[in-house]
Image 1 (cartoon, helix red, strand yellow):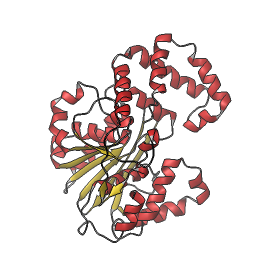
Image 2 (cartoon, rainbow, N blue to C red; image 1 turned 120 degrees about the horizontal axis):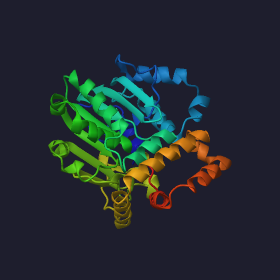
Image 3 (cartoon, helix red, strand yellow; image 1 turned 90 degrees about the vertical axis):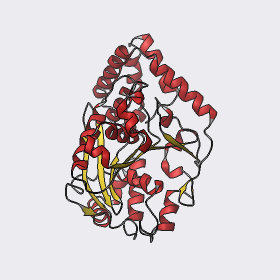
Length: 346
């Protein structure tokens, strides 16, 4: 059974009949991937109404042009829009920021148990990928600062418990925001969910701010995880069975469920070995040179009009990009090739 099966099985059960759990949490995180601009604003709207407006605004042909993970999130929205369990939850405060410095998205969901602040993971933009690479040498990255600001603003007026979560980079943002938000907002946070998101440097996880919230963090990774093992963590972790292998396990729709919770499976020793090698490489990076390289890489992508990952499928542009990379310092290139060979995709 996967997330879709869970929804079909429990669609008529309220949160009173079946309490909010880890599966509901990961469902909420997927809603943050959907482009709700001009549909979800500061005003609260029932999920059913939001879904209706979205599918009226975007025709089937428009949706087909969207990237796979957004289409999967929309399939989920379409499935839950008229269910007894989810149709009346309220969505508000959707935000999406994309520029040369950052790719950030967030959404707040009100349900019977409280407020859920969901952060978007990396989208298909080159800007989003470049920001992910910055996690190797920059702290904080721009999206982390926005995540903190967003949670502090939402939490300031919250009169119910707050849950914070995200998938992939969104999981990292959820932890960072909870760690650094206003003290009084921090007291309202009941649980922090990190679904296969990367961690932080060793210094960060030793700070008082991190230790104050670490017992509230619940981290979920598939048993062949790479992304969720990147950098460092010090929190409660569940390793989950997936129906796929390798990087395909990052997709939460492949995670297996039984009795309304994820099925636990032993972590693959190979994944741990690869993750440790990646972390060792990141630790020994010449961060100054690597930062210069990443900035140069982004500039070259812009020059070649490579703005989305799909543009890399255009062979002539990709070949030109490789030609430009050849001119860059060999030591930095060597480190980058190591990282790419380990398939770091957030």
